[in-house]
Image 1 (tube, rainbow, N blue to C red):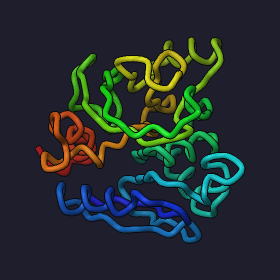
Image 2: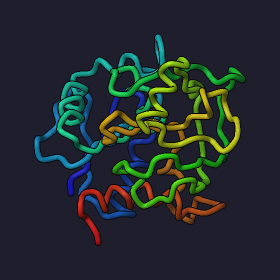
Image 3: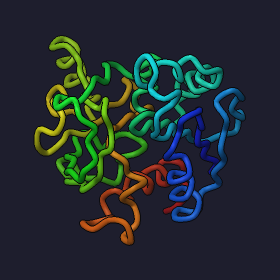
Length: 226
């Protein structure tokens, strides 16, 4: 199973993500620079967190026009699993691969703390090992993490089961406490919290097992384990 971690100028969680995918879950993982293309035989793509282009203009908007996004879009249309974390989520939204927009947190402050997620959709490549309503202890680290959609779009997301994660409590003012969504086909998932920072017990003071299920779900989807 081959997983690509896309690197943009300003990515700062790419090595963390690579470590978890390669060293913890032993997946064939490679970095791919944003100016280059993706190989046709890739099995999954991850857009990591960070501050691509220093969040100039708007978080993720410049990276959304990087050459590699054309390949990411093609992979999405083919049903390849794609995960965007934090800035990666912002890039997926800005590129139109996911609905909505990420705004400044309601507090207008950068937030770096632990929170709990509630699983709303366990039919995606990254949530198939979860139970509905399962709780995930996980850290957030963002300044523009408030997910927003209008009421009409929110109803469509709910109707089409595109809400993947909700915060257990109000964290940053996100619409309906949304922390992660997917596209209509379910193969493209974006989330603001950082699963790569919680998948190992050495750095998770609460419970690392729920966060690791995000990566274990991908392995199940791709047949990398039983």
